[in-house]
Picture 1: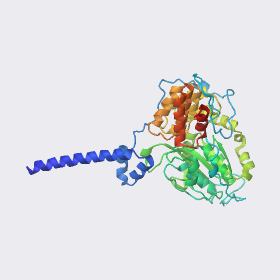
Picture 2: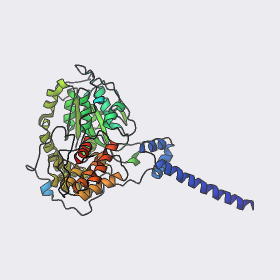
Picture 3: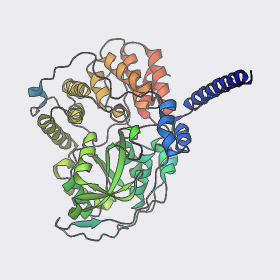
Picture 4: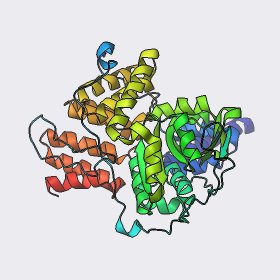
Length: 455
């Protein structure tokens, strides 16, 4: 008899425990990701993978592939292009102001969505020293040295989802800025869950600090070396797969390059995630850097403008820079047709040049080959290309797939709004633009689009 009662009590205890576990999992799932991550990291390391599988959403493996099989005419997409291009501006315009329409023709935006001017209360101008604060172990005029290291940085470990503000703050500390990542984040990402801080937003904030900044693509290790020899660090955007938690998978990341050592074939990086003075092999850096079309941000003092332009050479011209980036991406896609990042870079370059039909075809090929599912957190040329070519269903399907697990990306709400506006649905468009502004009140593209519709 006692055994039977004991079995019943054990059953009830197990059932109650299972119910409480389910309630706990549901409660944690309702929290914002930064709180979920904090709770999971408090667990013993051997329990974290199981906790992540229970608590975190079921993320897809890749960006959704196109609904129909895409046939790419490589002879056209990989051939040198001389026509159908526009001249991109050094900094994309901060507002896209489509005109309300009820036709299927998409409104004509004036550029990629970005924010270029920090709010007035976030524009202090620090005293920038007349000369660099750093000391370099070796700065010869030629590139024969195998050991160049800039100093004078304040390393900052990033807080949750904050590599952009943290890395930019390290870069600004080189020029005497005393602020930190929280100060930069007030403008760069008012919502802590915002997954993307664009390079142009980073450059705009640096300019608000009394410095100058340029954004370019198609960077290279030799170009990094030249800037380091000139006493100028280089901030790059790259792909990243954190070693301690490989189950989290691929993501975007910023890194500040402060030196290099040819004897080890490596650059030296200040990394907000892995730590200061990280040695990164050249081939590893270039492989992950290529995931973002080798984007680089050069922050410098106003008196260094001539030096920066001379070092950039032909890439000082934004249009020439994009054209050269296209040629690089085309060559890499031709050499390795199964490389989705190369095709994505072909698409991004075509989109920047205004050839949206070619851009859309290249993006289709990249998706067919398989892109990391977080790719649409960071790069939005694919939405611009599909939108500009009237592929509204593709815009919505791609945005919805991303927002289903990550609703904090204001650019995607913005593109959804553009589609609804183009389809003659102004009320829905207003709702989408308001949602974009909910996640980022500084996103002037959405604010301008909403104003154009009449709030």
